[in-house]
Figure 1 (tube, helix red, strand yellow):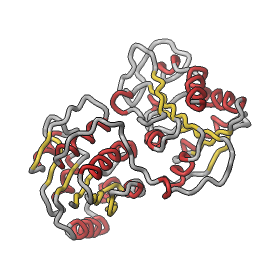
Figure 2 (cartoon, rainbow, N blue to C red):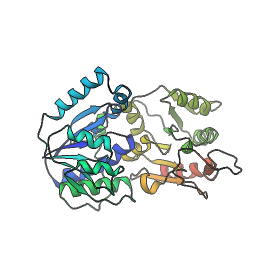
Figure 3 (cartoon, rainbow, N blue to C red):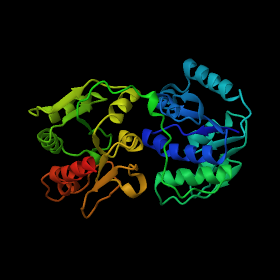
Length: 340
């Protein structure tokens, strides 16, 4: 059986989908998925053995020049590639109008979430088969449920198995005991204070660990400098590709992260992962793995699900909810996770 899977982004969403591929592979021997994915995340699907082909798209880049000759040529090439096979099923696991549109470019029966279950209900009008999945549950459970309904097998009650092929990552080239801190996020409401990261790194150094940090954007590189300032236990690494970061995470003793995509990858790799939550709710999007832990803010307006902190009361830190998530509290969870 050959399935075209449409799930273009984001990193966390892609990681959340991997356990569903594992379920399907066990229920339907020989099933293969061709995965339509945003070009910047194209490496991720190849980490799972059930994925036969990655089909990169550049929706984010194309919409900046939607009427350009280059975009027209890219769409024509995409349509040609999607028409190479008659798919047994075209499964849109994104649930957006833009992802539903991509399904029309391929040959096969289109399936996805129904009007009440999809992120954008209008997307459901593009599907020939529609399924109801409870929106108010963890994203991994939603994906596993959708796949089981669309492909016709019982929903497993086992813990999620991401099916990651660790052999695709570079081997560890150092015996150094190191931790990785993932501080970067586009939501200002999810940014744990720089001073807190520095204090946590000092506590890690006292325990004999090096701390690795890296930045993707110019703002994150500047933030890395602020965090590392005056802290001898921190190593600032150059900007890393997804595969390089995955290798770094895979061999770490533990990872501390805000709510960001690489936290889900670390948890999926069974690395002890401590995720910090303020504005967002780990019940719906928390990093899940055998050795993952969540530290959530205990604050009246948390989780607010807002991109920016709107609290106007007095607070020693910003976002205000992180006043309840101190470095000492995170360190206690971190060192306990490493020992276990």
